[in-house]
Length: 593
Image (tube, rainbow, N blue to C red; front, side, top):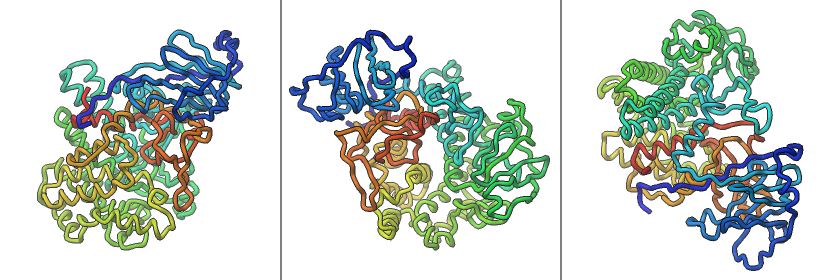
């Protein structure tokens, strides 16, 4: 199937789970239904459970439901797509536990009684856009934190209303900027469809702007005045984590907070100037909640992950929001200018207050010539070239410091380094006695995508553009096998002649879970999926499971990983994994309504 794709309406599983003490909610008919071992002799298809493990069955609307001691199977012989013929339901996401004792149909729902409770399962038909709206509403209600969207912890498993009133993540800037990109694309698409003054468009614009502002706040919150970017921040009303370098602002001074990391780095007691006020429009995100600038505690030791996502966010916000919001555009340009000049003026590193580079933000040739930086060079070289291209584009400054710097890096071979990714990654894997999947930092898939996609689109030299496309394609061995639209759609935007499996993309959207609650799926109980052992012993599933039958994660995990549990039902992830991919696809015309 060629692009653009159309994603048909899909039956999506919605499961309500009750423990055995919820006697009023669990129907008596379910308890009385009993169990009769099904006759499966005429069913010539692999099933998730052993045939001997099936305990009960129910036929409803031509669909066969099969309960087992190892989960629940839904078999629809008439399903239009092969992916949908067999669906597997398991604890903890779909069932209280995997021992299904009886089944009962109640209107549109199917009830499953287990050892420890019951599950009410409804297959609800949604469009891809409707599913995105559901996920976004969940994120806004339970995950959003002063515009930042990463994840939120719960104090009671499965109970979203028990969310803790605080949270932080090393990569708040990364994930918030990615969410903002999806929201900006949603705004653009809806504006083209309904017009600028439609209520839906105004809501989308407000949401996109808030997310962009939250990301820009992290680029300005330190007040150092030198373009240093914070990973995240908390307020004095929240506990200060002990997982890195944190700084407390007080007037025009900043104090290093005592943490294990600051003790280790001998930074406790350090005080330095932070004379630059946070722009009022950005500070409003915390001031509206009653906090002042002196209530801010921000996290440093920022990585290239954050910086890369911020620059892509600046590029997209300039294109989509900037034309109608000149004040925001000024903030975008100011923030990008300060950070890019910081990197250049500090020898292509992000430099901390103690004078040393941060751990993971290095783009200089000296780092590339180290044993560790040798492999990083292929990605980091593309990152810094992208930052320069973005800022030359958004400011219209094709000559001057940034262009000179770009040309200097080209003279050093920075445009050739991305082409060496496949070779160097293979060699570093072999030196580690592992294969490429075991050696891969899966978050690098998104970083490569974010670095190369804008770089290719903004590059003006035809030969370099083609080399960057070749470099992007050199990641195919690990990226394309994931069949993740969040990677594949930017890839197609930058490399329109490339092949991407459109049917797998459709199935990814259709089979995404209707909640980002981190609840596990029991792979260990399945008998229809073999384990694959990698060279170094790493375990994977032999086939790519649909998203609603594997763990919930960000763009930083191996979807083939043999893993049953993730999050313990005490965390909700942001919706950006879905909304970024879907609305970017609509923005580029790769997905039709």
